[in-house]
Amino acid sequence: MFTVLSLVFPLFSVIFIGYLCGRIAKIPVEGLAWMNFFIIYIALPGLFFQLLAKTPVEQFSNLGFILITTFSTFGMFCLTFSISYFRKNSNLQESTMKGFCGCYGNIGYLGPPIALLAFGPEAGIPVALVFCFDNIHHFTMAPVLMALSNKEKQSVWVVAKNILVKIFTHPFIISTILGVLAAVYSFKPPEAIESLLNFLQSAAAPCALFVMGVTAALRPLKRVPIELSYLVPFKLLLQPTVVYVALIYFIPDINPVWLHSAVLMAALPVATNVFVIAQQYNVWQERASSAIVISTLLSIVTLTSYLYLVEIGTL
Image 1 (cartoon, rainbow, N blue to C red):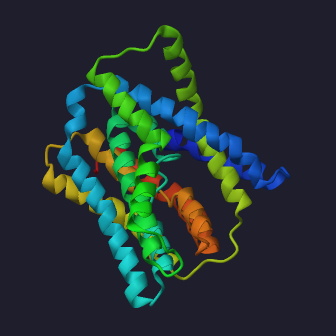
Image 2 (cartoon, rainbow, N blue to C red):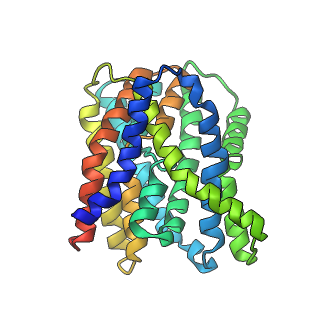
């Protein structure tokens, strides 16, 4: 248990430090813009490229792993969306946001640091695959469902174009593609570029975690929506359970690092991007913010418990 606590303590401590700074320092939320830009467009892409460029090519072709993790995410989205739309009689936009709260984890900021520290560099490949294909799902579902609602009237071609632009201009996905190409062609950057990428790689995790804490502080919890009583357990407990069972059942000889990396990515709290989507479409903003804060706090317990069960060999 001490080993697990030693692992997660610095990660969640940086989030807590960011939270304290956000509460104490009187800096508006706009002050995060450049740090967010650095993390998303510079540091984390550098991390993904470095991990993937040094990976044996045959590891990228694990189609079964990709299908199981992606369809598990899609299944959770359909479940939470349906509960909201049919049982609660919500509109299409609100149900879409609830669907994201039930399946869209913090796979960009929180996932890679924890997975790499817990399972080593080998976790980089499954983490990158989950990130890319889950984000393709999210980038597709949001504009399509919002376009189908009454408030968003766009042609099929405009929606399709927006989806493709979001997918193929996302810096994480670009860096993943470049990393795979570098691995295929055994490309090694010049020593100076290699040093720069290593420097950026080391900055990615602390910066991302600090921004998570500041963001939570600048979006204070005002009220707890009743929907979170099922959305948060679905996200933190049901989704990783589905991924674990599916991978064990369909790929019984799966590499333990790939298995636990996928489950950890599924067990992450609601992504801050859910709030960004809520702001973009002006729907469910306050409750999306509450889902992020509450799930992040509870994930300290659930993620630590999962890593402990892995460490003692129960899983």
